Amino acid sequence: MVGVKMAAAVAAASIRERQTVALKRMLNFNVPHVKNSTGEPVWKVLVYDRFGQDIISPLLSVKELRDMGITLHLLLHSDRDPIPDVPAVYFVMPTEENIDRMCQDLRNQLYESYYLNFISAISRSKLEDIANAALAASAVTQVAKVFDQYLNFITLEDDMFVLCNQNKELISYRAINRPDITDTEMETVMDTIVDSLFCFFVTLGAVPIIRCSRGTAAEMVAVKLDKKLRENLRDARNSLFTGDTLGAGQFSFQRPLLVLVDRNIDLATPLHHTWTYQALVHDVLDFHLNRVNLEESTGVENSPAGARPKRKNKKSYDLTPVDKFWQKHKGSPFPEVAESVQQELEYYRAQEDEVKRLKSIMGLEGEDEGAISMLSDNTAKLTSAVS
Image 1 (tube, rainbow, N blue to C red):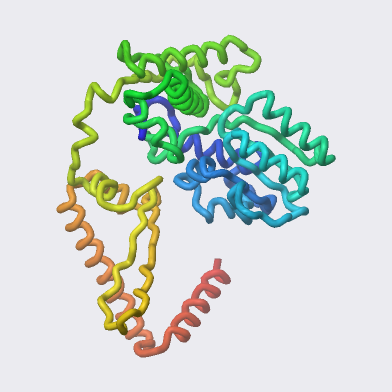
Image 2: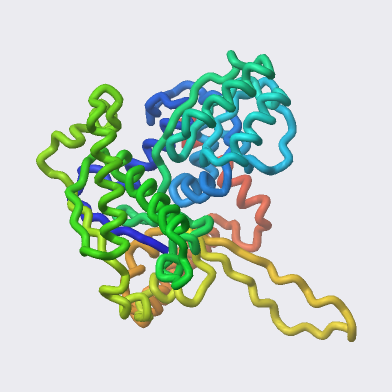
């Protein structure tokens, strides 16, 4: 997978923060999201494809989506029931298949209004297809907004993003270095990489200084990206780098440096398997988009011959900045992490002992959980009343 690290000094806000703000603005009908607004959010449905799902899931939790008014989040190509009195926010790639399904939704009158957001820029011909479908379905007034979001990359950390998760083998090292790759396939790979990098710099709000190694695929990407940036800057009225929301853009003296190199320059690094916590999780466990999936191991049970084995329970854990232990120890050698786990366990046990001691003092020892929960409810009510 192609991954990119950026220096934290590129901008005041990290790329993670910038992409999160852009997503929240999109979910708020492309109006800047106010954090401390007291009013109820407008309840809405989020419809995304697999690409949109991969972009949103590392950045926004289900709780955050609910706080933004998202009552349902559904895949575009799943079977969806009509909800005629609720607006729908779409977040999809502008592919033929997706456009056809969106046109079908318009014909079926699934939602009250439609806010269409495309991960990458949509072509004029596809936009006309949507317009014709809306006209035929008498749903022109229901299409409230159509936006190109330029969010075609996945941010995993404050200073790291990857270009894609779906169909990632199409832009892999192997794909580019296949001996039988055709010129057309190579162009497609380059265009995919350039589109994601262009989206990244639009979100960052800065035009990069590009440096690359000569005579390699890196140079092809650099030339194409340079051309795309220049074409956008040439049209001052519609430039994506001069808007108020993006900051000073190309007028800033602190332009980021984008260094593009061919993987052949350093083939050894991907073969290193270090024993730091994060690297081991990535190597050993099922770890994708900041989420690790584990199968719960069940003890050996005596079961009759021919009986169906018990299904293993799967558990998922999000390793995000909210997880303080992960943030603190992900770069530590594994023996240190094991010691820290032990310390955390001891701290937890000490806290548990303290609770038991308090229960004993209050005469609640041996009481059932109902009595204890009733007490805590009453305590909460008293605290609220005092406040």
